[in-house]
Image (cartoon, rainbow, N blue to C red; front, side, top):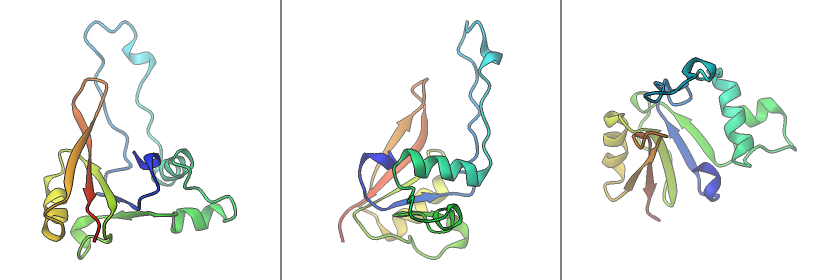
Length: 132
């Protein structure tokens, strides 16, 4: 989602970079052969930046992690308003209703869609802020 365009991105929620537990499919022959991989937060962020082509090779690793290009990490409970103006995208865990309410306070017209996992269940939500 982050790599689809160059819109500013806000990753919201304290547990957003944590690995996601997923049960094996019914009848899966080798569920323990592919356990979830848990990456520490800074490594997960570095992977996101690199895969989304937002890692700036002209800056140090520390600079990239401290101030990612067009990407902000926030914990809504400790923040004021949404730190973005549209157009922008805010990504958070689908079940996180507190974060959605936090976004809707400042941006009631934001459009929401879910990113589904392999089972077709919502994992992440993307709210797109309209221009303005």
